Image (cartoon, rainbow, N blue to C red; front, side, top):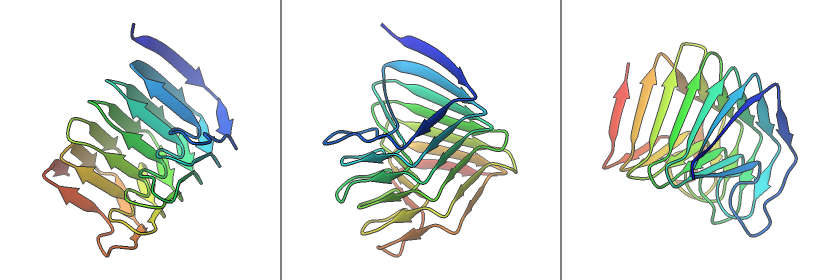
Length: 173
């Protein structure tokens, strides 16, 4: 069954996911809305230091931050990992920033069936680091990303591609 949660003014802070994914939150077959909230300082030895979205999940960030999270040495998506037709929507001043991962997608990593939508001039993917891989800010592997007025800046990757797009549909407006 597909669960739904609306979280307002919540802090998910300093959590760990041992040998798993989703240091801050692991979302599977569910819809979560985070409003005026933060997911910060979390760690996963796998992927998705802040948020891990799997199996048709959707997370909406409204005036919320996913910051200072880390994924493991071989992990992807320091801030957020999206797989299996999952969706991330960031609006109204939301930030995915200052996250790190050992592999690719310091800020956000998404696969071929997932989608990320960053809308608004005050929305940012910034200051993220992919230590050995590509996509310091965004690593889009066949998925789709839409950036409308959002900024992607100051991200770094061990591989020189600060934002990596492979076999993907991306709209930047």
